[in-house]
Image (cartoon, rainbow, N blue to C red; front, side, top):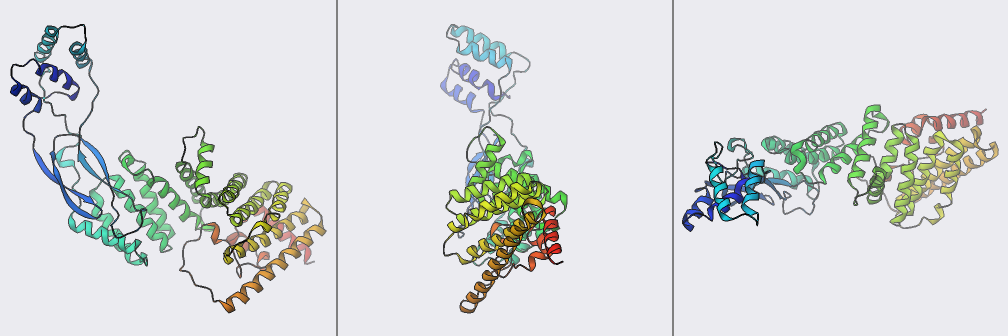
Length: 477
């Protein structure tokens, strides 16, 4: 006989009326349940869990899936199905019986009569064990020992020191194929990791595809069991892969990248705010690097007004964490954004950023060089604004001359430093963040006359590129 779990309280009350305690225990037990051991993955090893009833419904239990030799927690967790209890909603009939059984105004005889009436009804066939949430043949089989070892090898190859992304790529592909029968949340984490691997290999298009697959799995109903950090991580990964395409990204990709940054920052908020803007600002506060990238993505998508606002946020949040160098870089970028749709306001914002350069100091020479490079870039932008209407020609020539002077000094200093200390060559990677902007020996006054450089390397708004072209064209006559 089968009974829904909502009648469990009634069954307990009815059992108390039985003549024998042994009979009551047998009644409530539902008879012997079948048991079987299950394999559980814990920190890259396979163990056997205690026997559990195969007829009870499912609930998820989070199990870390990073191998124990790694010192990182960026990999996604794996969820293993465990067998626990199920709760259901009471039907009107069972609710009535519940009230009859536990009303302080009813006598035991009423409980007994209600129980007899219910048992004699056509639908009285029952079992105390709820229906399983999944049929036994539909439950995903846990990974085999060989598959677990493959997973360990793939992750140790990718996350080990030194990282071997090239060697990890085929291993991660094998793992994804082996995990195809597992739940959506587990597969999503693996696609995200392979997306990271593709990004490390400079394969932006493949990275975008894997991040997209991870996102699709995570937003599906089955993806609800995933670690909450997985979705923002996948969104940020795709946004950065798109951002690395720079001006080679299509209009649709640029807009998608900006949207991904926005959603990732909102999901990264640490507080329960009332509005979307408050959530966005809180997320940007936790990661001003991503906020700056979001501003550049908006500029690439053509929304320079919103880009200016986001770059101002990034500037403020870098300042809050005592990072004046990146704060002033973000402020100058806000001025460049502003100049696209309001030249006078843009010129004012750029001028205000110059006052903060004197506050920048430190021992990070490449970072200081990037600040001077951004200053030279911004002074050329300001000169073009003055030349084309936001000031007078004399101011324009003064700013252009000062920009070239600063950039020439930067180049000479960098060459002298390299003679003493040859630079360490870093491995190539996708360029998307604030530390990838031009530095010493990557910018000069002559390069700032090149339209392709302004468009592809500096990612300037089209209107500002046209102003610079007019500046140099008229001055050359």
